[in-house]
Length: 303
Ligand code: CP
Image 1: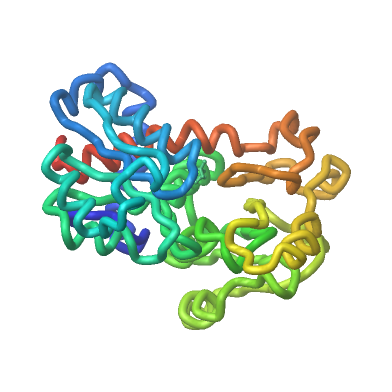
Image 2: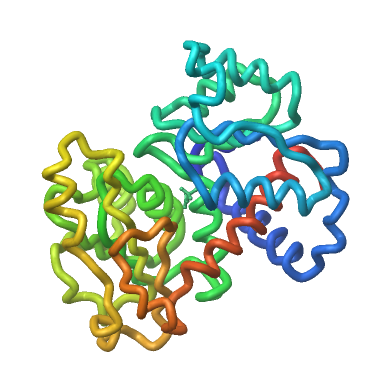
């Protein structure tokens, strides 16, 4: 495997290898401090980011490598009309590995075809965000000890939420999982997720517009309603605060519920929830750095 474009580029065995590597990095960080000496990571971000870009950069720095790149399209020659393919081919002359975020679905795949170095999809439009999924999987593994027989609630914008699509895809590769999809009617998961993953895999799932099943969940994955993906501001304003997780609602939830969120958060989780021991979203942020360290090592072929 040269690139990571979709979570399905990794087999279940490779996912476990990455989890095991990340756990070893957490346990013995010194062992990895010089693994990427003289290697360079380019972060090409055509869309805003805090966690993904900075965790990639922190990951490479902690592996002893260096980083270069840009954090907005306007500070690159994309603003002058340069194509994604030409940008990737150019950057491949300066770096050993690329992490790319782009608003257009498929842009990282185009970059991967043009560049002769590994390209990692760091989020493409409403499509995929595989390294967030790796982050989520490491968090689930550390909190729940495995990936099977879990009842997972996804709440919020399930239509445009690329992290939701990638994580459902990943969790459908394990046995016995059940899904509760909580959203307004207009923000339900796309048809291909229902048909190709949930129906075809024979998974139990419920689509609902209320919190009634919260007490049954092992994991609750909250998401932001994404203003930038709406064509119409009025629709965004109508839907943005429909689902807000509060400390009061959590009284009915399991004691070992794992509350996740890819972040950034806007209003969908009340601040008081942050102090609840079940809130795992800032642990997720830290896990993101470790799993990206493991991924960089794998794609660069470094043991
Ligand atoms: N989770 C995530 O992708 O966050 P950023 O947009 O800040 O990178």
